[in-house]
Length: 511
Image 1 (tube, one colour):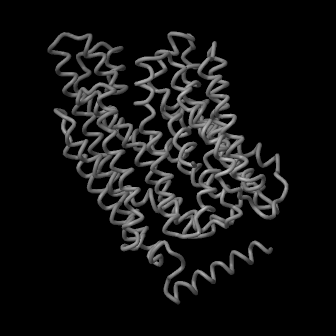
Image 2 (image 1 turned 45 degrees about the horizontal axis):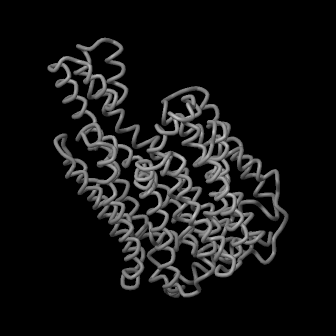
Image 3 (image 1 turned 90 degrees about the horizontal axis):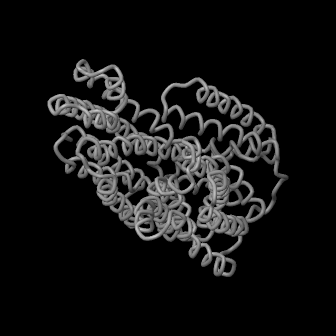
């Protein structure tokens, strides 16, 4: 039952990608409105995750899940029949708030439904597989619907699943909430939104458009408000976000692994998508279908990992997977400009190698969160991932594009200033420029641009491989005491160390 909302919320991240041209023809949004139609869903999910996770701990996670599902269903129908860009933006915003209510509620309920750790590990793997499946299938589902129906159909696809959840969820799902709750602090809610939303907006705008003073100022504003938010949480007896969770080494280390791998994955995936279309010449649909295979392999790896974790310590299983993924990134350096087979094989290796971390890190992180804080802990994990996606594009993708711009220069001397500036900007712009040039100039520009971008992919592959090897070492150091996921079966010395850490945390809590 919990698979449904997870799949649907994840699918809404990407189901609209292919529908933008169709709704543009119908609603005629401006360029800025078009961007907001696509982006506001993710913005508001990121902004409201922390608040909704804490609200779920207070009022009940099932209750919040069902409320979020109702709003999600109503907003989906309204979005499907929107008559103006403003209406569609408002509906997408409401979908984002509802999605933020659903996501931590689902993960919090999963953590509370299974006392047997083997079953919990499998459940978390299924949860992650559903999330990845929704995000992966979104563009394909959208493409099929758009082939036969109007653009609003991509929103209606969620409605049957929401109806099933509302019909059977109240009787099948257990309720779970914190036994003792303090008052919700409205100031903390406002501060969290004023920190997260500007941060996410500023970061995405800088990634999309390069350096501009306004997004940079908004980003800095978000960081300053975040500092104020943290100070307020330290003083409150019932904080919106319990910062004491970060003092737990296992929880913090799992977040670091989540953050870094999500950042690397987002940055490299963007470059790979550009490479497949503009270097090897695949169509967007063909590139999407090609990348579907590595994603399916990762989903399979997620589902198999719990069985492997019964025989191999989580630290070694995750670290081994990270080393395999690092090998996949090294394979990036063998990619050429004549075909997609090398990068396809590399992505398959990367996704298989990352699967154990994706499957087990949720368990390792959430296993350290007190049951009454499950919603808040889930929101922290998911917010960390949201931040990582934007940062990965801002860093690794920028590295690849910088290498491209440095290496494409030899082919720009014979072009007009306008064409040279366009071709220097990105490889896809270079492909467009080449289409307007004489054959000999076009061939020279395309060859140089494709070689230049491929060099950027090679460097990003090397950097990613080094990062993953470092994460493998960190994993063994931090999680080596975890023998399996059945409970606390560490050595006496390690157990004594954990007891001391718990005692210190308890002392801080009492103070």
